[in-house]
Amino acid sequence: MKFFAATVFTSLFSLALGRTGELGPTNYYSAAPGLQIGVANLTVKCNVTAYGLIPINNIKVTALVQFTNANYVGLGAPIQIESGIGRVKLGGDLTGLLGLIGIDSITAKVSELGIVADGTAEGVVDIAKILDLNVPNTTVTPNKPLFITLPQTGGFSVTAHSDGKSEIITAALGSVKLNATAHSKLLGNIPASISCPALPRPVVIGFIRAEPDFVAPDVPKKVYDLVEVPNGSLLGTAGIEFVCTAGSFGTFSLPTYVSGYIGNLTVGAGAPFQFENGHATVSVPQSIQKAVKAQYASADGFSVKLTSLRFSAQNASPEVNDVATSSPITTDTYKFKSTGSVSVDVPGSNGLLAPVQFTANSDAAGQLAYTYLDSVKGTLIVKQGSKTLKSIAFSCPQPTPRLGLFSVNVY
Image (cartoon, rainbow, N blue to C red; front, side, top):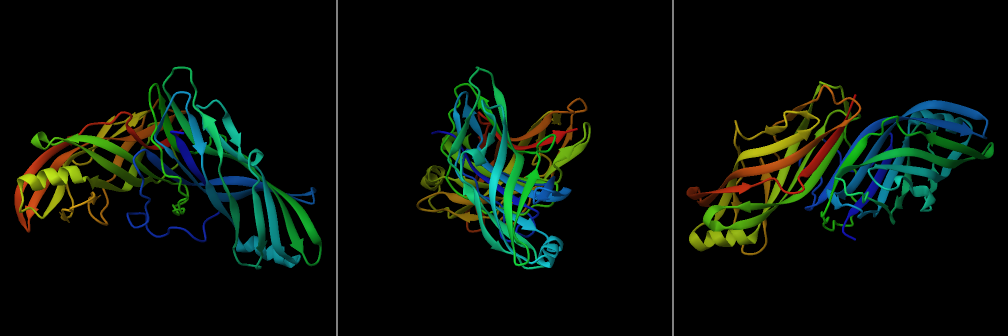
């Protein structure tokens, strides 16, 4: 199977564990070529009914949701969901109330977990109808946050349309329902149902391009820790393999992944939004290292200077935003290796790219604005100690398909 959408993570309210701290290289994901990881922190409203009679409606809950998938797929190709994990957090105010009636633990079963997959034959998939999603018995400590671990998910698929048309497939969280039992020393077992309807316009966590003759690469079957992102924001990491040319040094592949986040899940038509706290990593392969060393035997290291790093947008302007034209980006210096590739951080080991700014089109209300990484140009600066031996120009044109990063609902 050539396409994987591998991991759905849902964590309501926030995470007790996971990658925390200021968003940046120290807690970003790494993504193999062809892989896209998106995390959104969004607010939904849930309704709770106890004993089938006592309703508590419109409880605001923050959901941290992650999708991992390939960047593209062929028409009619399967999109396989591989695995997932999640956590639910109940606030200390609620556990305090539970403690008053003697509740000391909770068990639950997920009765509905909808994944909205626009652009697929299925449209919406209810994972709970395919998999048995039982939440283990979890102890309640009054006035302390309660974290309920959701079971791993996996082993189902959706299918891209096969009607011959190019299409963008989006992945979003739909409705969620749980049947819970609260175990009380005073009242015995208290049945409760929790229902969180899908948002009127589900927040798209990731998008996939489906095109004729595309063949998606296999992507790692891996469960990733969740990165906590600010409420109302979207984090993304995406990987691609550029095919670059470097004059007499020939052609080489340059695996690249880019991470960053957008500080808002929605944007008004005609309003600005930006990709910020960006960071990129490129893997300089052994082939180009050997070619350089063959001509410059005394060379022991190199750095990279980017003179063009182009991002583009759909349903937003400018169509192309080059963050390196006015201010070239220079990396740290790295040693050549005798085997394997060298991983290069852009702009530096803990550096962040300048914000990439766009404005949603004034006529794009009701649509999505998409952002992509397009192309890279620069020089490989060959060094012997602190001495520069040669500056080798290279160019990495926009790949086909181009690398999708983010999408934002336009209102």
